[in-house]
Length: 330
Image 1 (cartoon, rainbow, N blue to C red):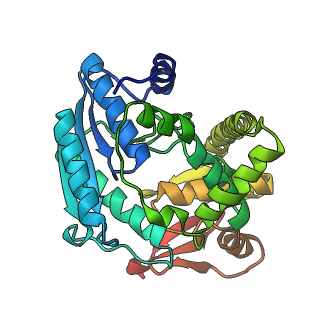
Image 2: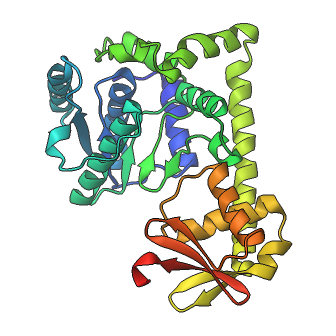
């Protein structure tokens, strides 16, 4: 694909500024067949020659739509055309069934993440590239505002999160569509993207166009505001880490929290330290205000010695510190 020189440079610079791409990398590329992932694959195919990249396109057929097999075949032909290896699997072939929480979108995301991660292991990939773009950031931000979230939640998606990279996160959807149209590149269209029963689609078709109509500066100012929120979150992460190290003590194979030091913290910082502690010990928990309040009630308002945190883990008071105890040890 012959990208507009300025657009190619913009995306390439974004990749380098955020250290997403390096010479000789193996990258798994999520390929749905939609415009964003098709554009991303073309961009990385162009970049491949310059940086000796090894690309593996990954398409998951969720088997949810009548056109699913056609989409899979489209992706196969696209990869063949670009000379890129492709792996196509059906959801029923994964041997993995995540818990369904009522959101089909979230269920599908978990299936894809499992598929991509397993593929990355198989090919010893350095990264998994996804086609999220600037408009996706706006939608995610407003979804979280509407549903309620923390400051961390408002930071939305990051350019790099673990193995996952998002080269198009500063690129507008219209820029992607314009480039595909200019180069006469076909892509698949998912009709569910216009289904108004989904909150994301309502935000995309109603809220964001209204914001742009109110003020044409919306897109640029949104990017600047989001960048500021992410900087604040980065600072708070460092502060949380320092406070966590100050409050925590090693007890046997786990770290416990000193109650006196924990109590001295500002409540906002204390909640972050508790969350950091649970994450370090790989405790699966809902990141919700009610869950953290429940822990605080046990720590500061209850005289009980033990509080069941999850079916397999409990909080336990031991002298001047609070520790985690496996229920399997009881």
